[in-house]
Length: 163
Length: 124
Image (cartoon, rainbow over all chains, first blue to last red; front, side, top):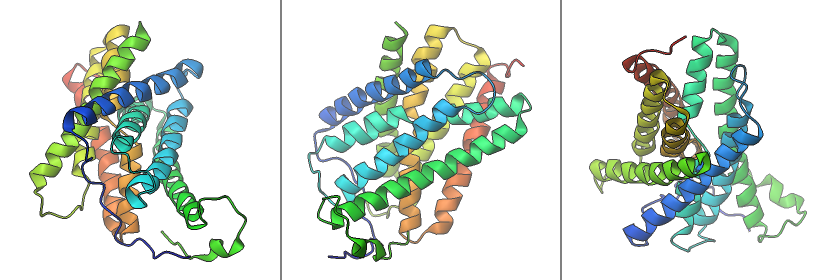
């Protein structure tokens, strides 16, 4: 029942599909991901000052989703179609989340002398993003270890997965 | 129109990040074990530098949609950055994981300021 602690995780190597199809999948996913991020900013526009909540939420949700995806694909091999990771992982989630806007927003806050907000935003994004990818990966592993069903089995809780 | 520009930028930025990652990993050599995620690091810093230039140059809205929101947004990634940090931590490389986060934050911030400076400053 209990699998070993993945000390040596499988490496996310290059996709097995032909390069042209991989690039097309990444491009299509990147367009969709960028549109989703832009859509979030249209729905919840950044006020131009203060904590950039929309980009924060985009990055944290994208990190949770990649935690699920990477466990299902690279780590456990539950999803083996060769274009799934290039499309959803590299493309959609890579295009949806952004590091450049994060860095530019921090710079903007610093330039406008909103030092406390800049530091809070820097730390909060890093902590929430890493926390969400970790929590999502652990939750997905636990779910798969239980046979892929969301069954209430307390025994599965004390597998001692300390990441 | 803006939506189309964002989509085109995203469709270029994401493959550019993928090719950067592959090129950097190929440069490291096939026998070199996966240690530090230099590929994503390179894409994130390059995208931050370009976004700094665009911010400093105060480009028009359509150019901003295409290159800043679309291209820079998709060239850089927080999801892969986080996942690669998690991998480092879970494979017993906690120090590298912390160094990865700190180096990315500092280099990304520095790249934005450098780009803005090259293009004429933040204009504040």
